[in-house]
Amino acid sequence: MNRLQIATRMHFVLLRELGQGIDVGKMLKREVYARDVLLVCDAHGERELARLAQAFRAATGDAAQPTASTMAWRESQFVGGESSGFGASRPMTAHAPVTTPAAPRTWFDRLLS
Image 1: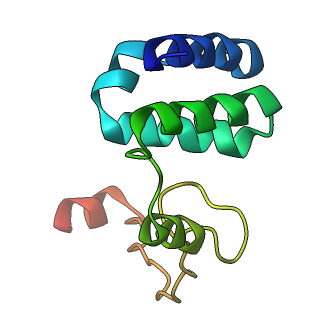
Image 2: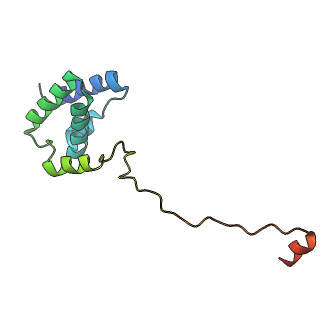
Image 3: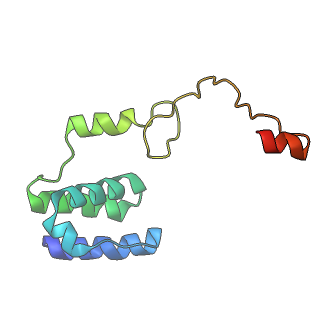
């Protein structure tokens, strides 16, 4: 199978499994997009997706294989449990309570304030 056939098959399997396919043209032209799609295929757990990801890498000559530094960074983002995707959470710092001035009691007080 060539890269176009593999990417097209990935599109349909992802559409079936996740309800959303991929942009096949982007997959063939943009290495970063291809790497992200391949990581999704690896992480999903579907045997066919993992096999297709491996075949795409072989057809590309391993150009889309994630590097050790990329994998270490991704793992560091999930230290401490689930993440929202916006980086590691930080505990809230204690702030002084926000105080608002008391509302004036009479119309005369409001006129002077």
